[in-house]
Image (tube, rainbow, N blue to C red; front, side, top):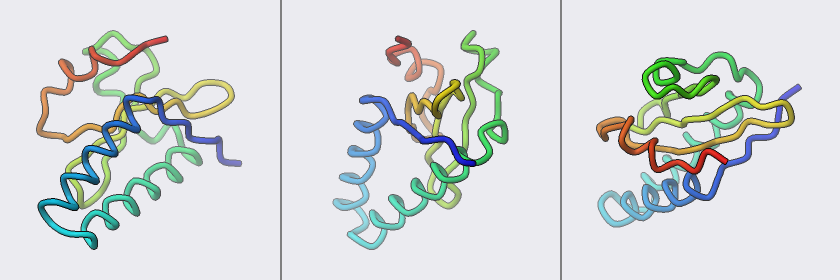
Length: 108
């Protein structure tokens, strides 16, 4: 059974910024494609939370942190599998300095 995927405020803000960027730079079809890819990623991590990479967990000293890419879009979902849900911390562009951006995350 899939766990609910619950994005934090920062993750929702990341998504809003990405959608606005794609709407402005590439049009509505690409923006909708991004949203579809994000929804697929959320469904996947809800069903298979352990399948995400733990690469940044050690680097950032954040036990349990995992990441999952958005396929054809250069974004990565960062999340933690907690008992009752999948806690999505950020949705970041893969070309960013991920450790620096993750430090902005509210860990509480």
